[in-house]
Amino acid sequence: MAKLKKDGTPSKQGEGGGQPPKYGSEKELREKILSYFKDTDEKRRMYSKAGLLFHLDISRTVYSEYRKKYTDAIRFADTAIEEDWVNRLSETGATGAIFYLKNAFRENYKDRQEIDHSNKGEKFDSLASLSNEQLEEYIKARSTS
Image (cartoon, rainbow, N blue to C red):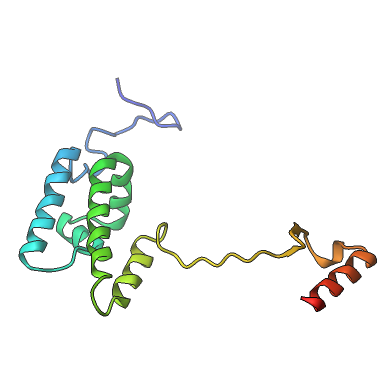
């Protein structure tokens, strides 16, 4: 019996209705990832996501989909690439490595600036919400500090 889509029409999934995944198993993907690292090491080059995607012959979109399907293999690849660039930070001219890490691994490497807008440790929404008395106290406190 054919599977049905949400609209009730027959699904062609599994019947050639879409492009099959390039890598059918996590083991197959991991082996191809390892071959990328081996080839890159032999060429004495840095690991990169772009290089890995080229080697795997997949797009960034497919890589993101594989992140959900083949969690361990993708996490392994990301960690190895990140480690290679982090190690580069100890070398001279680390600016390029810093740039790459901030862009390739945004969730882990970002410039943060936390600003505490408070009144003697107490948060307030805006100066407009203060009474005249509170506003005068606030101004006096700011001018003495």
